[in-house]
Length: 81
Length: 251
Image 1: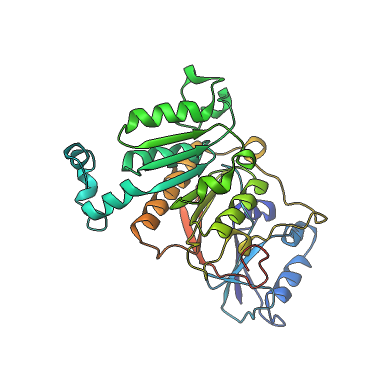
Image 2: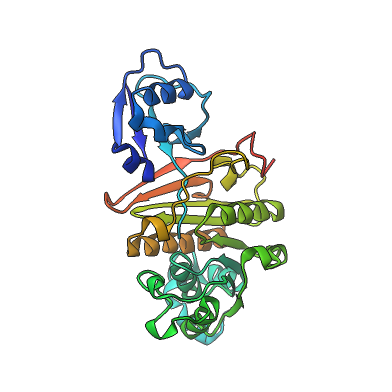
């Protein structure tokens, strides 16, 4: 399983803070993002531009490999102040 | 050197191992620019003033409105309709008359920003919109001035310190690249549209002041990280950042 975390307003948009996603067939972050988005309409916020991603608390790109037991996080930019 | 009065004023800093007299002198010699004196800028400016940062430049062009008073803690009810920077300068001057405070009553875009930050030790981005954030980031990258940026909306806060004197440092646009003009712009949420819980600004603005002081003192360990704060969970999380090879801003 891959532990997936959502931060800031993304958490509210998805109505989900964290989940465990099966790692079968997931090679990199792009695969994971596509598989999450394919779950249905309510996952569309994941397609927004400018979503920063991290694997095991380090910033990562769509091409970076994801393995079983990794922790993946999605961060939208926050503004306001 | 510190005067006898400064020795007394900063006595509790002088006792802290990581500050002491040498650190307090560094703070006294430091020049800091704060862009935006709203929810984040008020607490950040108050702490940096009280802490004895020698010269503060405040850039802000708004006037004080009733809806600001819920969180912009430098401003009082009798200040309504007055210029934010002018009131801020006055209030901060009362907090600490030992330091110099410059008030620039202009939008950052019209402020001759490069000349204002060229000799600065740190710039604080306390603004509320992406357009200004990208502008400040680019200027700090170009002039190699460390940048401490924060944001807060609803119950969520983000904080990042970039030590841009180090050419390997990531910048704000490495994390969140500026969208192309033809791309759909991000959700333009701000405090006026999404609201914000008042003390969240105090948390994030105080963290900006803290990170600014650490950069001045040479404590750069926590730079290059994204810290997220969730007010409802009372939880912090941290992500290590890296310079993006594709970043159009800092390469």
